[in-house]
Image (tube, rainbow, N blue to C red; front, side, top):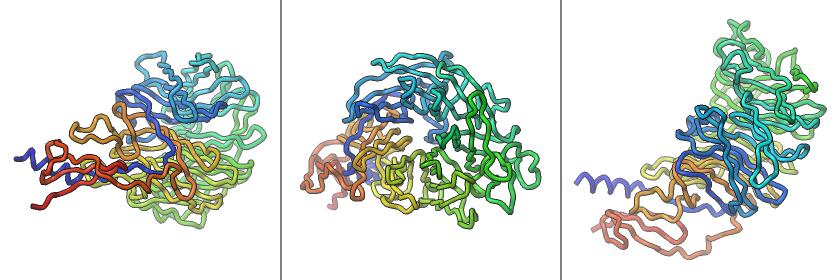
Length: 507
């Protein structure tokens, strides 16, 4: 009797699942373990190259791109339609160390691609590519190619930093893979800092964005702040407490890296409130301003004569700052009652901003978990103009488990390509729930898969593959024990548009 009651509960809570009409195409890559696609770049043949990790034995902490555990560097090449061309994995020289790729950039000066992650490696243009060199001393969240054909990497702590938590590390590497110079910034004590993204400004100047968290840096003991801008009630540039976004200007002098003071001789500026605020991505426009994206958990905190607001669990946070002095031009927090985190963005020729990340909030397209009436956590996309006004409200893509976007690139005709991860399993569902798709996810190879989507952003997520004119028809009815076309008291109906409905038969 209890078995029947349990199955009845499952069927009653089964979510309504329907494929989004704005996906041009979507593809999965990976194996039975945990795989993620952190970075994507369009190639000269209009295809795409993806960098991430493959075969991790445990998932990332809190399903965010902050930490990866075990696995190998994973590089995949697909054509413009998302069809697989080739893949290759690279293991760490120490089999006990975790390995992954966080970013991949085409090297137009030296040829091939430069990859940052658990370590830095350079590959050539062979098919499949061959490794030219690897540097295991640098942990890299992002990497950029300098005008002189060398590289600047930003990331977390490594053997170079004296304090293992002092991970706001900026390093210059030669095009042969040798370390030229490296700097570690932070409070030099118990604080936790990490750099996540770098972009070119002009004349060998760069902007670096990351996170700082230092409990010892406060009004009472400012001497413990080290290089972190000290808290100050009369200024906006100081550390606000909790976790802050930290933005630093760096000048490349060839053989050394020096910071460029933004205000009163301070090393960069902090942005945030009393709670946790984080930035993952930065891009500069015309050497005049920069856009940052991440999330904020601060609420009601005054900031640059404005107020940061967070509905709950963290809101998407997009900021526009003046590169000359770091002053805030505008800030936009977007979110609802649950977790909303932005991980990456891109800017088009009209300076519109396309953002992707993770949302648990009830936005359009949001899916419920398989056996519970709560949001599953979906890959999210939204679009702002250069003034921070919303053009396309947040829209969710995914299935019955956690899915999120980690990188986004704007393509022609208002299209964008997104790389990320899906944990919404299709083939691993119970056998009596025979779904052709799980929400927007067409397949799953086991655990987390790399998920690549090409999205049509025109006309507020209208579809070039619109199926709204199709007559909705019943495909099959599944009863309580899995029999098709069964007149059980509880059952699921599956339709030709991919949707499912839970039914209760009154007798």
